[in-house]
Length: 377
Ligand SMILES: NC(=O)c1ccc[n+]([C@@H]2O[C@H](COP(=O)([O-])OP(=O)(O)OC[C@H]3O[C@@H](n4cnc5c(N)ncnc54)[C@H](OP(=O)(O)O)[C@@H]3O)[C@@H](O)[C@H]2O)c1
Image 1: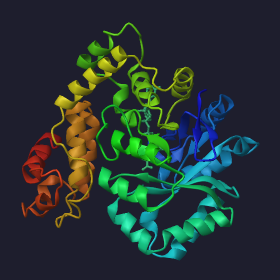
Image 2: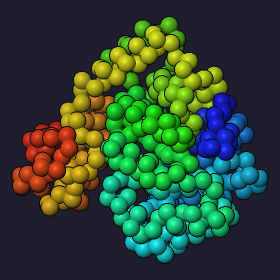
Image 3: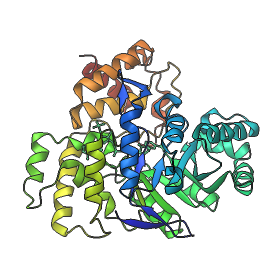
């Protein structure tokens, strides 16, 4: 296992972190973790050098924290740095912050959380929690020993990331980064900016939630031009590992084989170790995938709430995935759920409110029609 420094205290964290959002489940119900298999996976990971475990209040329908608390019994808790996240969208008062943290400590069955993150910040939630006194709450919790290091995870555009990063002396932050999301949300600029400010960096979705693990024929042909044989997942992880700014890369592994494979491939992943040729191959794959993107939506959500309840960014994400990553079945069945929830594109009455708010100046109305046509097939 490779280790990199983390926070100004230079803690040694494993480059590969365990994301506790995609454990094996029973009956296709994400709330029912297959505890026997998941425990085996987590123990194997820790026994083989992983020392960063990342969960959150909401993962697995609220059951991830409780499961992790159980799985880290018998000495495993002491072997890892435990990260979890405050569900800021559930907090409407200062007392809510306190109650949620206490509930999380109880679920995790631990006296302290090593790395505490404000979960999934974007402009609206950020403005809300600042008004509710989030800084005082975090420092109070740290003074009481309930949390050790303070960070946040992020889902908005780069200017908002910069604003949040500049607002507080954070220990660390967590952003989405993979070779397809170089300029998405915080992106590479965000990674560099955090490093400039000496704020440690955790990466999520390095394989784009699994979408980069299965290459269609045209992409596989490009990988095959390399004399180094790697799986698509390995190419994706290696690309993120190559950034010296990155301390931890979280992967939400869902089988023991993935745990073994990812540990193995992390072993010799030093920063700046990919050759020019390897970068050229990955860049080529990025450009082939990118040509298939239908809508340049960044999911900033500035278009929301739609007066008709249309889930605009979700629809564009399904529409793009359908064509780019060939997720036809998955995209159409997720769209069916939006139809059932009255959030699909057919609800659009073309009022145009969203188009005035979109920072990318997308022709949302027209794209919604196209998306609806493709996804309703
Ligand atoms: N803070 C936030 O807002 C936020 C948001 C997202 C994620 N996260 C955290 O970040 C973690 C990482 O994100 P992620 O789970 O999306 O990571 P990811 O590594 O991009 O995706 C995980 C998926 O990739 C596939 N995979 C992993 N290793 C593989 C291998 N060796 N071979 C083939 N496929 C492989 C699996 O897909 P299959 O299951 O389809 O096989 C797995 O479920 C999460 O688990 C969570 O802890 C945080």
